[in-house]
Amino acid sequence: SQTIHQWPATLVQPVGSPLSLECTVEGTSNPNLYWYRQAAGRGLQLLFYSVGIGQISSEVPQNLSASRPQDRQFILSSKKLLLSDSGFYLCAWSVPGGSSYGYTFGSGTRLTVV
Amino acid sequence: AQSVTQPDIHITVSEGASLELRCNYSYGATPYLFWYVQSPGQGLQLLLKYFSGDTLVQGIKGFEAEFKRSQSSFNLRKPSVHWSDAAEYFCAVGAGGNKLVFGAGTILRVKS
Image: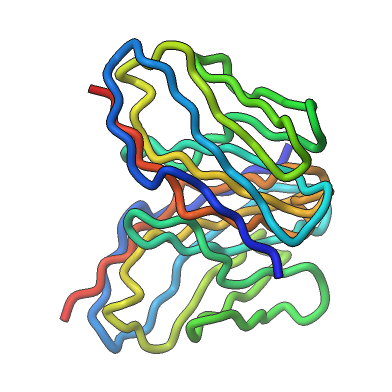
C-alpha cells in the first residue's frame, strides 16, 4: 500500500535561517506531489506541485522554493525564513490527473518562525 | 475555472444530533467532488468522494454526502454526531487536471 512520510513534525526556526522540509512517498511510481500551507484561519494554500522529477509549478510568488530530486521525494526550502512563513505545511500525493482521484496527505509540519 | 464555497465557517452541534455541512461548487461539467476531515495538528483524511453514478455517497466514520446537480451542491451529513467528530471539514472539487480546488473549511464543534 502507498504511504506518505513528512518530517519533521514540528520545527522552530529563527528569522533569517534556512528551511528544508522533506516529503517521501512509498508504494507508487510517478506520483503527483503537492505542498500546501495553512496559516491560521486562512484555509489551504497550494504552494507548489510537481508532475515529475525536476518539474515544479509554483502557485504563489514567495520566499519558498521546491525541488523534486527523485521520483518520490519532494522538498520545500527557503534560504532565509520570514515571520510570515510560520504555518502548518502539508505534503500530498496523487496519481497523475490527481483532481479526478483525490489526494493523500501527510501528517504535516508545524513551522514556527521566531 | 472551478470554485468551492463552504458558507459556514463554524458550526456547533450537540452530541447525538444530526449534522449537515454545506458545500457549493462552480463548474460547467460534472465535477469530481471530495470531502476531507482534519483533526487539530493532523493532515487531511479523505471521508468520501463522488465521481459518477449514485448521487448519494457513503463514506467512512458514518458520513454520507449527496450530489445535487440542480443546486451545484455536495452537502455532507451524519445522522448522529459524536464528540470525536469535532474537526475541520473541507470540500474539494476536481475537473480532471492535476489540481483540486478546496473550500475554506468548516470548523465543527460538538457540545456535550
